[in-house]
Length: 299
Image (cartoon, rainbow, N blue to C red; front, top):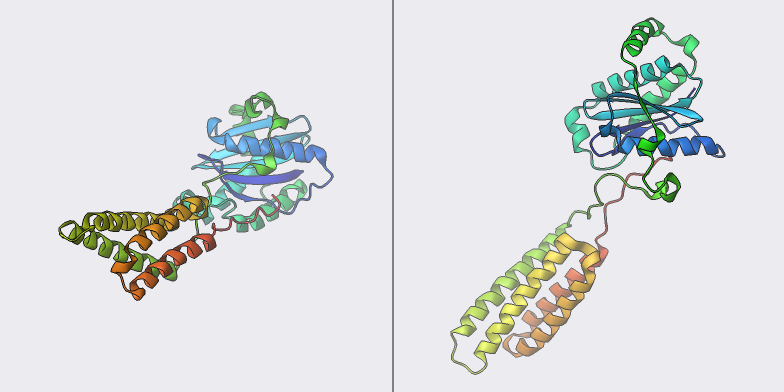
């Protein structure tokens, strides 16, 4: 019988969908074979469009078409022609339901987990071959497999160089790194005010550089530093997030010291606004989190 199914994007191994209705708790052999299947999924682009892998206790079937790879795990006794027929049917259903552009734009694992309903229905039929209505098509597929046998993958081609058990599969990740949550409207408002303060400080620095008053050159330098550091602080909030929080605190220290040196040149409202913007950027940076991944659905 077919035990487990996984659909991945061939170029990077990003999991697109999988069967979720099989409980492998207590089945050590099945868990080990599933780990080999997931390792094979990451290397699917390296192999021909129709392959098989024998783990010793199970058989893994693999087909690839239009940038998507389909893998199935079955008992050793399961007929080869039924294994590939099952994957061919899934491929037709998947390509008919999802456009290639949508698949290529997927960024999160299991973005098409709703397809597991189709997988579940097909598994039920193929695990009872006597009830298959597509039996007439199996002869043609059998002839094709006999004329063009599937490529047999060895375990050595799938195992890592330093051995399989040295890798913790549960911690392996696919796809791109997590992205930050979108900037809120409050964040855009704070950035806008901060940008205006940067322009004002820069203009005051330019004006101070032409002034003949005492310490005008020092004031010009301080205004320039404030403008640059505040811009850097906003960039940390917009692009970096909490992992660059230590640099945010360095910016705060510099802004505090520079603000003290020129506080007499501003009224209390100007000083208060700058303190508010600096504090708001710290708060928003701490509160801004990464977007949540989709759950793995126990697959």
